[in-house]
Length: 493
Image 1 (tube, one colour):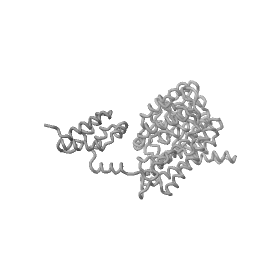
Image 2 (cartoon, rainbow, N blue to C red):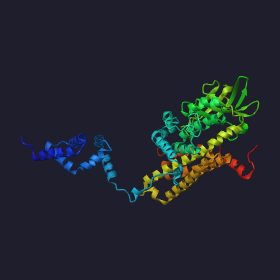
Image 3 (cartoon, helix red, strand yellow):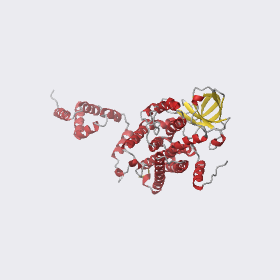
Image 4 (cartoon, rainbow, N blue to C red):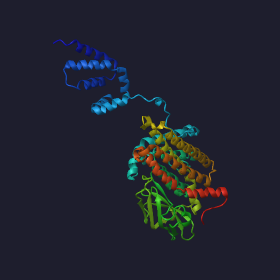
């Protein structure tokens, strides 16, 4: 039987098409896919296929095939129902609104402070940013909701080589304090809890050993902690003593001739439920001076219980630590920590990092809110185009930019060894207050969606409350600055 002319034409056209297209299997697949969509005669199928191929731009199809898997895409399209298909076509046909293609990128660094970094420093900043976006951000809302820690990120953090950033020796990078602040900001920009985990381990715990430990203690702990093979925590705050712990520390230590015996409790101790070593500060019963100890998790008399029902930093595993006749050998007493002044050295070094955390939290909230306002439409327009929303966004950006410039200068002072307690305290006071305002406005522009985790802002709002309080409350830091500028101490004796 002689084949109809249409069939001859079809195969001629197909042969010519396949010769000019290097993905033969995908073309065949497309033909088979479209020709089996409805029961009809061979003649009808061939005719429809010829008409289809006449309407297809094979060059465009080749270009598309370089970015997506065409068979997989066709499978997905074939599984859509009529309503879904109509919705997809409506979205594809929707024209961009006037000026939309010119929308500026979302970037919280309005004054381009990143231009002050060296090429290597900028590369490290972006490396950490990409890591947080790709590896951590997909995990945080689920873990935050469950008050669980994503332990799988610890191994991934190792590859960044950013632990103990400003320390010299012991495998540490020995980079400027400025970069430690930049990194703290980048981590907090995605999640404050992970930033807190990092700050407690790398800053408070390692910092205590670095500043107050003997050379033997540094050699034992710092290289392992730098590689995240051992995790550290820092125990200062007590159930009955937060801001006033320096004057009324209830955790005690007493030397019995062979060991130090520790008794008491610590509260709000981050990382403590899984830390290998906790730096514990205790008051010597004999001298009444504060001393520091390296308490190992296996020490008899040491117990860490996870704190539940927090509304902030839910990923952080805070614990109440109970020390009951806990025996610590002299070799695990921090040899250069003999008063609260030594404790204060650690706090001064890390308080700048908390100010940077506040900047990161504010930046994360601002950028999340800005992104939302560009996508969210009301009354036929993106809400970013309305005056009231723009007012909130500009107020947020103003606060954020002021915070950024302040902490940048703060870290420069630290790198120049000019940092004072009042410098760090002023940054902590100002940045934590402005952070609260930024996250509040971010919540405002999101409306009802501002209390949903899926938009991230709710998490920033909650976590900001923790930053506002820890490492020195607004009131305590205010008095530190007030004493410096007036010459009078307003602290209660």
